[in-house]
Amino acid sequence: MVSILLVEDEFVEAMDLKNQLESLGYFVPDIASDCEEAVRKVVELEPDLVLTDMVFKEDVNGVDIVAKIKRLNIPVVYITGQFDESTFQEAMLTDPDGYLVKPYNTHNLKFIIEVALQRSRQRLSPDERDYLESVDNSMIVVFKTNLEGDILFVNKAMVDRFKFKSVDEVLGKKSLDFYKNPSDREKIINNLKQDNSAEGEFEMLTSDGEVINILIKAHMTKDGLFGTMLNITKRVQAENKLKESLLEKEILLSEIHHRVKNNLQIISSLLNLQKSYVEGEESVNILKDSQGRVRTMAMIHEKLYQSPTFRNIPIKEYVIELVNSILNSYGISKGMVYPEFDVEDLKVDIDTALPMGLVINELVTNSIKYAFPQNRGTLQIQFSCGSNEDYQLVVADDGVGLPEDVNIEITDSLGLQLVNTLVNQLDGELNIDSSHGTKFQINFKQLQYKKRI
Image (cartoon, rainbow, N blue to C red; front, side, top):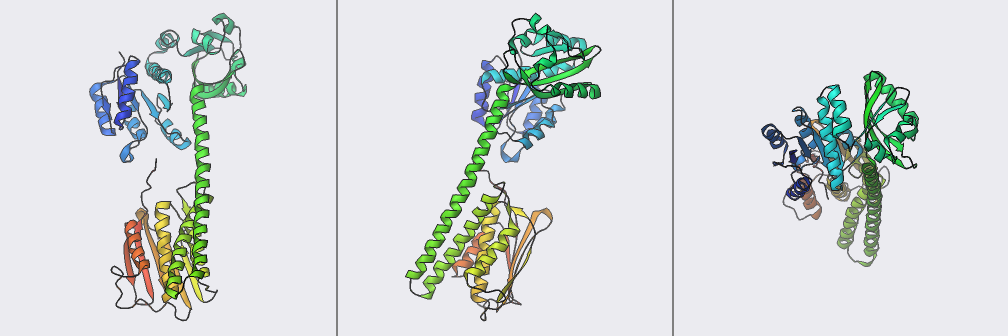
């Protein structure tokens, strides 16, 4: 009985997969939940195959697990619920023996496992390999041709897969007849001439003209080439559906950010209208400050809407637009309060950009309101990244400075209270220098992006 070691840190999924494997006639001796445990149990149990997820908790990468297991000459199959091109390319570097994307059925699961086991047997001699591939594994198409493309041998799986009536009917064909794009066979032949082996995914035609996706692996022989074919049509269809679904989700996320931005702008407009109906300068200022905070958040969602990804916000562009917007909202004309920017062209995720933008909004607003009695001066906004992703944000002015009795950690000012809270949210350190104007310096690291599923 074939023994399979599972590597999965989600208990419920692991038990479900274990039951499926046992219902297919396999033996599951144990389940590992992390990299070290997986490698240790491979050494102890010597399974025939390892079935592993690709994404684990605690930022463990399934590719790292496979890289270690492959050194022990154990066949490995990935089974994963997520698929993207970069992850797939990274996984392929470990030369896995199989790759299965959820959702799947038990037939696909068994098929991938049997293919992986068959591939592991290719360590045998050429004669033994020919025998096992043509006789021992009838689920895999086995073929042999000469370099001109005349089909010399096929097994019954070829007949079934390509919808022929008999082996003899296939032997009367040219291999070129099966390719949707004839140039694909030329690619295989050219690779075989260079490396004596070749593999690739191609679109091929059945006897009734149906297009199917086939994974071909071929090797040079003395009188031609010998190879196998795997029908991966369902996998390709599932991957294409997944890609379409991901594209739909990206469009949906973009639309969500656009609508959130519009709704925030409506709230900002309502606050602006409300100012006409309140009495007292203090009430007007409260509404104006709230409007600025809403505007800051709206600009974040505008950047996300414009961004090709939803994790990276161009911070330089955002900071410049934000500060200029604040100056404009307070009616500061050019030449009165001059902003100086020294902002590196970096990209940060929303978990960092939003609290950082709100900090800038509070500090710049505070400077405009209190630092320049004559409405003239200079604002400096600096943002840089040092070694080890250490970020530094500086907001400074050459104004009158903070009053001596102000303690920013104990203050009645909502704005300064927000600054303290936001700095803590960034897990940063705030330093203030009032020797010449006021200088706020915040040192922090970019927050680890939290996946929301």
